[in-house]
Length: 516
Ligand SMILES: CC(=O)SCCNC(=O)CCNC(=O)[C@H](O)C(C)(C)COP(=O)(O)OP(=O)(O)OC[C@H]1O[C@@H](n2cnc3c(N)ncnc32)[C@H](O)[C@@H]1OP(=O)(O)O
Ligand SMILES: CC(C)C(=O)C(=O)O
Image: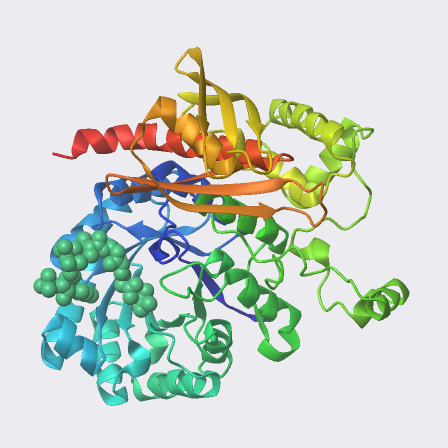
């Protein structure tokens, strides 16, 4: 029996610290449910003291998720810990994760505290957190740039005060794998009560070494919890991507001799969901979850794979959630083939009705596109494309004309509330004319922060996946839509973003009530 590696996912906390990746409470709940399906041990659902919205999202996730521990981050401050403790109180298993920086530069320049004050605050924080739950994690922020003797002292004191997990983050992505592995091992060796806690690593990707550092912390350092995010989302260059760490541990179990309880078939669906919700596309050559991760383009490789798959593949596509067979889905396919593909892709469907509705959308798409790819099927179930949070505005039809030498023109028919409106405008390009036409009527006042088009599959008849990011009065929202016509997808994505700006979800309504 191999030893267990605890997978701690922080997509909803550190992942949300990616500029532009802010999620609504409802989106966080949806991702948390998928993370539970994926089998992560701990879901860091947010930072309860950061905002009323984050507090409510953690509370909701705590009441829904049953098979993963739900965790809130908190500074080493009484008021943060009280909020974290209250937010996780409904969880079947709840954790408070309290942290304080331990490197000389952070203590002096940021916290304005002496090392003794930092230890005192850490101990107080852990003790208080233990009054809410017996599962308390302590993180020494910027551990990799901290002085080892001091770091060992504070870790010992935190464990003595009741911390059950001790995390050594490489907060600024400064570490080098072998050095970091030895560093973790050294600190564990110096701490006399180290066996009373699980040791954890949390690495950032500033030098592109987050996965390597995390795995070195595990293999050389002996950490038994690994902190990571889906698609490597996170502050600045991001965190260690969960899918990479998990597949390294399982593909090279001969080396790591560890197992984690992840249902790897849920990796691709989870990646897709996070990408759709945040509007951060996954690059095609991204390990495990990129569209090209299992694609072979060159003849020698294709020949090898046909003769024996293992010549060029170290993992099986179907084991991480890509479909195994190459059965081509198109307009002549039936419901059974469609359902089988949904099952293979691990798409969570709750009812026969949901499948039937998606099947109609599939047939509609297949009429316009000769071959339907796995990504197209996943897009049919994408939350923001198919289930907008608010339907105040809706897309009906579009007439867009562009001719060399003429100003592009667009006429958009859209619904507003119950009625239908037609609006038109000229613009600097086809997409600009569409956005200007919508705004000529809506007059939202929002700023367009980002417009991105991604071809979901590699041919000229691919579906276009459009992300529109709007900001208004401090709120940033992403609208995502998919269509074989990228101009129509752009209009739909813009309207989806406007709907999000207008959305008053049950959680947001509660938020509005609680905000003075
Ligand atoms: C490495 C990481 O990823 S840590 C997590 C980072 N994530 C976030 O910061 C997102 C959520 N943060 C927030 O919403 C806000 O920053 C809040 C609500 C936490 C605090 O907001 P504010 O009270 O306005 O403080 P502000 O953010 O400007 O400054 C942080 C304060 O916390 C202090 N602080 C920072 N870390 C800690 C800590 N671990 N324990 C105690 N105090 C801390 C800072 O020294 C500073 O104190 P000061 O106001 O006395 O100078
Ligand atoms: C709070 C800690 C774990 C963190 O996010 C970091 O140090 O990067």
